Length: 153
Image 1 (spheres, rainbow, N blue to C red):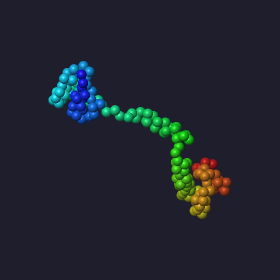
Image 2: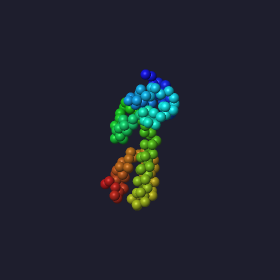
Image 3: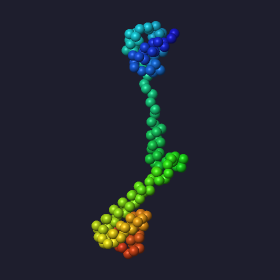
Image 4: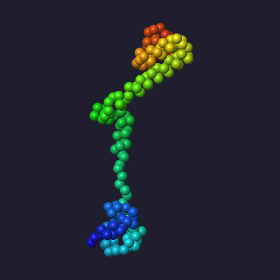
């Protein structure tokens, strides 16, 4: 009892591949006796022949991995391709530090903590890379005798 021809006809009618055609095992005898396309169409309407759903690739594992990466896992030496500079460029690091330092200096000048001349001096020193961070900038200011209001004194 061969049903390859019936499967082929059903695949054409269902608009899918032969391997996605499902035939109800209870009605295999009736289906094997069908020769014409109209018979197959009738069986499809009755629900004896159906197209199996398309199998997709599950995203469950990918989502779990993404959650771990967001926590900071899976970032060890073995996962790195590219230099440290490619992953976190020096320029970006510099831009982050200098912009934050300049922002703080501007605020200090505006609230009267720094005079314009002092602001200019610290601005140029920051530009020259004298300060590692805002905390370092503030500590240098306190050492040099600038009174900081609302800072981390």
